[in-house]
Image (tube, rainbow, N blue to C red; front, top):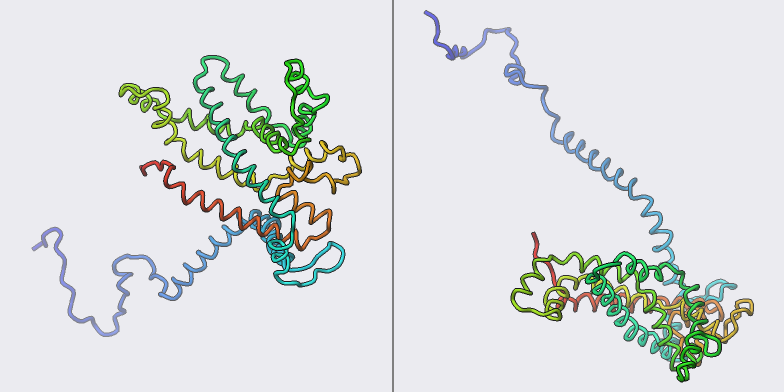
Length: 354
């Protein structure tokens, strides 16, 4: 009788003597047996290391640049801040004497800190408000948006030195066009960069003239606000100011945070405009770079912290003390940025995760 389809003949309980026994994998038609446990782990480790070497190879340009232009200078700056170094003789270890001198004996440190805080407290809010206001007006313009956007952005492309030279001439108290126009109107113009009371406000006007970068960022963020939110607020009876307060500001608040943090960091590092303005206004810029008496002109009103750092490092050849000032600036910048970011949770709107 034939066997029914699909049925299997039972295997004998014992095989005849001398008959070769096939491995189970060969009987089932499976592939070759897998590697033992230790060999398999070794192969995985080799694959992981190959991937890591590939990642390191791809990151090597960045690692090289980071080590050359950031890590090594930072380590050397920390070391030099603990030494007496005049750029001629080898550094001599003095411990924390530079830091002690900064807080106890340097007569120009606290005026420089005061001027730096002034430029941050006055200049940064005005820059953010001015850039945000221009961006808001451009979003409501009916015609010529591209032209006005270009006009307001072009000053940001001007090099800081050239812009400062132009402003010092424009606000020249004797031959400058600003005071000339004011004179025709019967108004006696101030001395601007030559007056201790007007030197820092003149620098603020210069910074307001070049807010094109912030303006473009704000313009992009305002245009990204969903239109249906404005429509819903308008249907609820919200006016223009209420829509700005409850719709626009919460959505663009992360961009406002970015502008504030960047402005504060730039304020702590404010150097080029103050250095050039003081040199030109004092009339000493042509004396082969001898600006020792010009720094901070007039009457230390433009003596900002980075300007004082430059004076100690490259005019007085106190590079060890200048390195200590640089380390203090780094610590203060990090601390101020951390405080702003931590406290931003109270007023920065965070979008819900998708």
